[in-house]
Length: 399
Ligand code: GDP
Image 1 (cartoon, protein in one colour):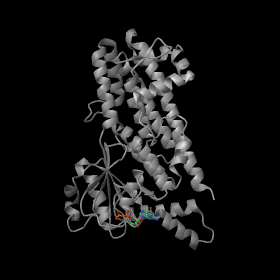
Image 2 (spheres, rainbow, N blue to C red; image 1 turned 180 degrees about the vertical axis):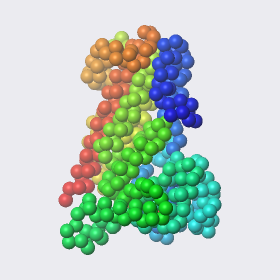
Image 3 (cartoon, rainbow, N blue to C red; image 1 turned 120 degrees about the horizontal axis):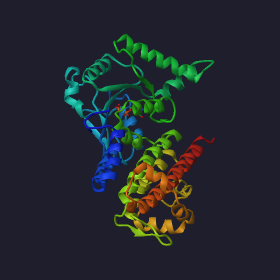
Image 4 (cartoon, helix red, strand yellow; image 1 turned 135 degrees about the vertical axis):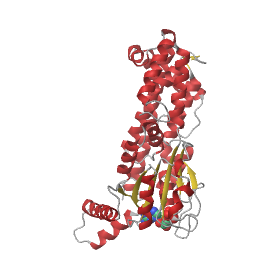
């Protein structure tokens, strides 16, 4: 896709490969630019709906923040959003969720709404209601469409609806009931003039249930490709699929980090002829730990929301990378402690790397080492994230 970034990701990869062959210095500059864009692309998500519809609770849940945490969007039936309020993602400062006032409030009349909230800055809009979208919601959706932006309808508090339906139906069928609620909502929106409304039924208290995963897949698919990375990394770890996507996103960057590391400030590794840029590795592994929410703050938040003691979350991790500060010294210590990784680095697996990158021979050895080390640490961190996830599922679903 051509756009403000000039060329597609595929085209950028091609340009990097080309530059690495002809002019490595320029190639390195291109890689830096590419990684910077991948990891710092701003993503701004607008959440709008009437007061009480569940905007703040959804914003907090998406960011993995509890309603009572510092930095949480204030929730509760009496709170009223009267201003456009930004809520940055605690782990990724480039991702912000915005709490917008409801349409038609005195300061934000329907006809001036988009202009007043500054619609240009938002990548897409989520319009929230407790399953009954009103005239103002529809007007807003049509206006968003007219402005060339995307919108998605989110029926909040679906757990309450399901609870009520279960109590009132003799032969309660969860899937059938969900479909009936969704169909009914879509029919209502069609009747009000929205051609093909995308409606998702969500409980912010149970994001892993109902349609949140479907919403996440839809958003990921419909976002421009240069924004997908930011979106995937911002997602809460509520399913194995999400964690796999995060891992894939990080994996795709490893060859470029490895190239950057080639020859720069490298430290010889004991027992090996290669040198590795430990500071770079420490920086990238820190990204993994934060992306997989294994940093101290994220684990504390997870402990608060799940009720699983922090020490128990920490105890299931085996990598020694979670809940700590990743320094070059720690990386060096871990590398020297793990014979498996040293064997891995020493093994001749240069050809695959060479084909991917097309790099001058002088840069290869330390690049290959960094490649393998990063891949190794990524596996460790992703496995730990999986263990933490399983621990929480086990502890919170056991009766
Ligand atoms: P806002 O005014 O749109 O920001 O709405 P809030 O997020 O403050 O939510 C209003 C009330 O609905 C609060 O008491 C929330 O606890 C409750 N609420 C929000 N989302 C959900 C949900 O998914 N399920 C349930 N059961 N309650 C919710």
